[in-house]
Length: 170
Image 1 (cartoon, rainbow, N blue to C red):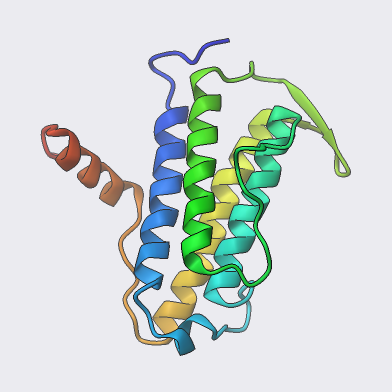
Image 2 (image 1 turned 90 degrees about the vertical axis):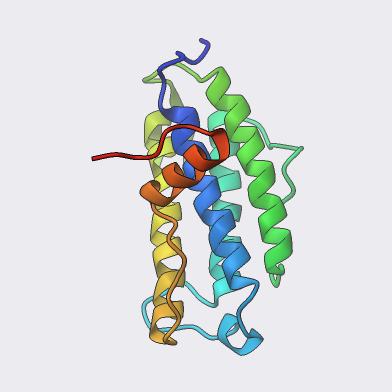
């Protein structure tokens, strides 16, 4: 079933990957001591958190496609941010290919948690990413560093600027 031209899925996935890549690029400019620190209540260090996010998303993609996405490399422990960014770029391409020809709603997948609709998996991709980006924001913020603006409004401003579209108006 081809994606409707009005489907928000490609845009939402593009935003999700853009925000992660922007955050990774920002974090790559931070001191190594900050990158290797953690805070109570977060997943781990910044590189661990972002690699976990990408590794999980790769598993979500595999679940939706019912196949290992061979064109997307797997995450590994101790992966530097540059490799995590490459993984996220690969995921972005694979998800955009999916979004161009998505499965119908109410398609089910099976995993250890039970029978799951693909909409649930797609929602988890977005939710999981937001949660872990927020954890990285916590590490940065508690170190006195203002995180980059990677919300949907910032994405839309970037997209409009890039595409020559009229700016956001009220």
